[in-house]
Every structure is written in C-alpha cells, then in structure tokens.
Amino acid sequence: MPTNAETLELAIRDTASIGTQLPQILPNWMVNLGIIPKDTITNAQRIGSKDQTYKTDVIIHFQQSPALKISAKLSNAGYYGNWYGHKRLIKEFGHEIFQSITDQTTKWANQWINNPNANLFVGVSISFGERTGNTFIDFLEVFDGIQELKKVIAGSGEGEGVANSLYISSEIPQSLDDLLNKLKPIDQKILETKAQEIKIVFRPVNPKTEKSNRGKNVYTRFQPTKPLNNKKEIQSIEELRKLGNFVTVEPNSINHNHILDDLRDNYQIIITRKE
Image 1 (cartoon, helix red, strand yellow):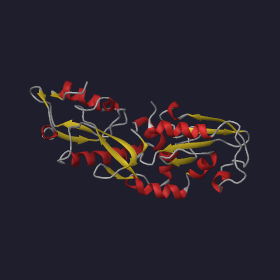
Image 2 (spheres, one colour; image 1 turned 45 degrees about the horizontal axis):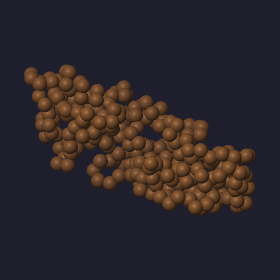
Image 3 (spheres, rainbow, N blue to C red; image 1 turned 90 degrees about the vertical axis):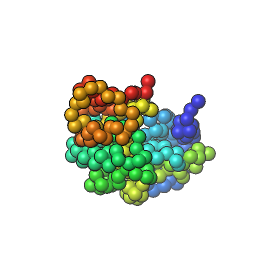
Image 4 (spheres, rainbow, N blue to C red; image 1 turned 180 degrees about the vertical axis):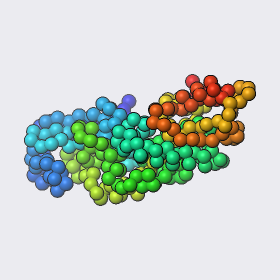
C-alpha cells in the first residue's frame, strides 16, 4: 500500500496526462523557466526513488519546453534533506562545511549527554528540515547564505534530479490547472522563507532501540578517556558519560555500528544492539 507521500506523487504524475495541453496563460516564473504556453505534455514520471540525492519527485516532459521538475512535500513533511552522509555533504558543500558541522555537532552532543531527556547514544547523524525543541541549530549558524539552502531544497548541479518547483500540500491536485496553481518556484522569496524554517537537525541514535539507522554516518562520536580493565555492559546514558566525551570525526563515513564495534573491541565497553 503506498504511503501518503507516494500517493501524492502518483496523483501529480497522473494529473499530467500524456497529450494534455498547457493553458494559454502560465505563471511568469514558469515562463521564465522556458515553459511555453499551450505546449503538450509528452510524459510524466515519478523519479525520486532513482537516486537518494534526487530532489525531483515527479518530472513532466513537454514537446518543446524544458522539463518541469517537481519536489513534492506533504504539508506536514518536515525533512528536506534526510540523513546526510559524509560523501554527499562534502560533494555538495565542501570540506569547510563538513568541519563546521562536526564541530557544532560535537558541541551539541557534549551538552545533550547531560540532558535529562537524552537516551543512550554513541554518535549523532544529521538531517536538514523543520524542527522545534532542543535538537537543532539554525541553518545560518553554519552556512554563509541562503543560496546554500537551495542545494538542500532543489539539489545540486544539473540534471533531472535537480528540482525547479515545489508542490507543498497534502491535497492531491484535482486537475492540471489546480496542479499548476499549487506549484511554487524555488526562488529568492521561497529561500528566504525556508531559511527561517529549515534547521540542521541533530539525530542521536539509540542502539538499543534502533537498527537500520545505526548505519547512518555520524558527525560526532563518543570517545572513552581510556580502555576499561574489564568488560562492562552499559545500560544508560548516565553510565556512559562517566567514561568519556564526544569528539569530532574525520570524513571517513563512520557510522554508529563502527563506534559500537570500536568501544567493544578496544575499550571493553559493551552496548547491546537491537537485532
């Protein structure tokens, strides 16, 4: 059974039926993309699952115009860049941003480990998205300007995976006109708005309760002060924080499982993992 997000993407695709002609009057931003009024739709596809870096969820092709590449978001969908790995982050933003993020993530983790709401964790992954509470920092605390945010929202570089429009609604389009009316350009105005909403989200992973997420890259890791004399099984964050602190990492794709292995093999610290 498709998810709500998949249902939305399917509806957008099906609304752009082959052979349908665009209206005579189009929004100015669409014309500025080179899309020609009354052009004919030749194909529409869901492509978001082709590559994890793709921001385009649905692509609409025309006889003469360049493609309309739509990033589709449910109204309550908070993430724009989920589980960013080291290689992807450096490719899109560079080594300097990586270093800044590992510094900021480490600072946050050494504070969070003392928070009464914290669960057991040995590493922290990151995402970009909307967030309230205490597990984020503002996007502009790390990035110099909102143009970098465009890479998070639209993608980086060229090609079909780089979106040129946004559909943000939990309501499926009822017609082609309805679809076109709900679409928004990824322009300066939308970037300024999203810069106030999108955060760098810290995602500590509890190895005792999470499995697949343990394979995500981390931007800080727990580092014991010294190896223990005997094996010790750790059950809580209170026990762990007595043994060391969090430190920055190199861009070597280290994940939560790597840290757990290292703690077990080199420090005699045992943390049970969810199977």
